[in-house]
Length: 208
Image 1: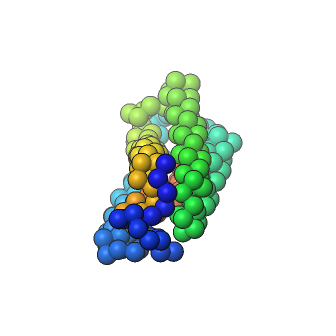
Image 2: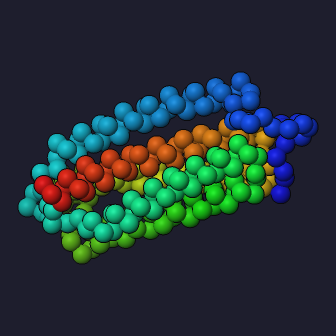
Image 3: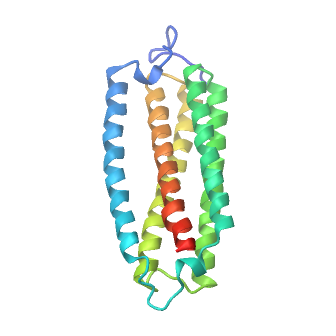
């Protein structure tokens, strides 16, 4: 496995290698703009869900359907993965490549755990509770919002997995560091979105 080094393999990396080059700084700035667009998109899905959540078409309601222990477990897993992502960035700043890879692998494993619970949840809703995508306007809004987030988690898991491979092959450089950093930004974003989903969809749905 390659060690931490500069882009040309000489000298030492700066403390913040993700911001060591103009390209790296521009990449981070562009990703902030991308996340702003994603926030607007998720905001639209939240607004749609809130508008349609009571239109059950005589199908299951949120209070009848949702199992808070499962979603609470999924929430805990995703929040822990956000913490491990923080540890990964701390390792990046210390130029500890092996430690960075370990924390990224743990983050990916937790992401798979979250996806497993979500797939199990969807399976239960569809096959046990007859709550399908087209059952009602509520079900369509629910699967669109929660499924869209799940797709983001799946993409994040694959993305971080690819970056782990790049770290093994190329090591930590001023080229790979910005990629790791923006992937952590992305992971924190989808974690924050899930907190809103857990609150707005599940908690309010259960008490409402």
